Image 1: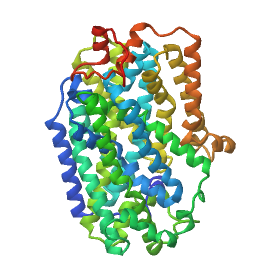
Image 2: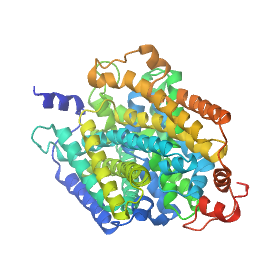
Image 3: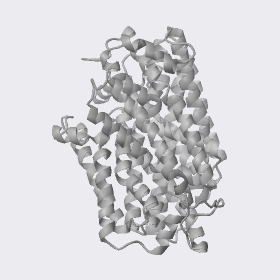
Image 4: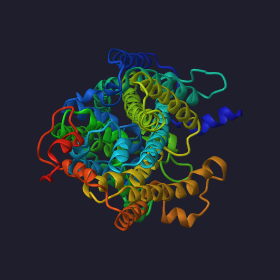
Length: 558
């Protein structure tokens, strides 16, 4: 067996019909052509539209973009996969990814919009008056985009393989060929359209993915006699017939890991740059709040349905393929496509299975769009235009941004050819990083005016270290070692998937401590923070900096 074939065999889902299918292929090609067409129709030429869509997006449209941006392959495919493979532990992802939006709504959405910048590192750099802090935030944003997007590329590769089969790129396996093809299309339309076209596409992608997911769930439930009108509730009746690994709490993973994972996902949600930048694309803080409410509603439509899909898929797998748990049990590759696999095992028409698969591709592309726009803006706007070349023209900034998107696409594709973990686990590493490094800066920067430059630099550096150590301990061995953690004790105490549970309190303590023993920020910075909480509405192009410069930035009630 060749190296490529060996790799493909390890990544191929058992039971999935991997071959070219005409009707699903036509459906997906039409969908990808639509994305490219929208990208071309809303192509951009200036930085305002490239990074924040001209601050012109309405609350429902932004809510749909938040939903599509958020519901990646990790939500569409990975959440059901984790519940199917690890049972009760998988619910940590439902809780963590939902609860984080309540904190965003209450503490960050409107305040970030009032601060009124282009990117998340922009906020860090201006709030703490530090190019070093801006650079750390920009590098972190780029890193988050890279790690997060690996999971999306894996999802696109697996689902694309079901639809197109092995397209036969020389030297690559079928899975690898599909990763390269899908990532090339995604990078192609993003370099053209920027944030404006990406947002318009996200609204379309949300409709495709939620229709595909819900119609798929209802069809499987009805055809197999699992459910009728409310599969999100009715699946509970079959829990007793499933294995204890699916239904009993903490059989597969410990209580501590459940808490660590859920906490990291909550704070990571509030620290992800591609989520926070959505609040910069709207007209004012009121629209930012309402778009968060709409986004949470759209997200919950899928999250409340994922456990039912996992239960149906688990039962179908055990009846048609073999035991779900034990040795060998269901592989992570099969788990990652359990949504598609369930519709296939339910013997639904091929075109219908293709529709469900297309929803997974739409979900992955929508999230990669948000990640790559945030990552490229960090390089182009925050590092190049603000640090390297302050006189850069808009044309040159857009050019550097497009080059950054291509660079992100290349490194992500290379890493996704041989991914280290299932989709949801890969994504969770990015959440831990965002929670450990960026969330404390956003929260303290907006809610404690005495947080200063020295405190921010010390806190962010600490967060990076605490996140990096468990990543080296657990993830590095999958590439250059035996696959087992270097230290099992460290992996149990500070798991890579939930390292923010340890990192966040430490980073808060370091940031506050260092800020208290060094000089307070100047009054101009404090006025900026106070304006973020003012009840006075701002116009579309205003920011806290504009208002503070004219009225002195008196404190207001929030």
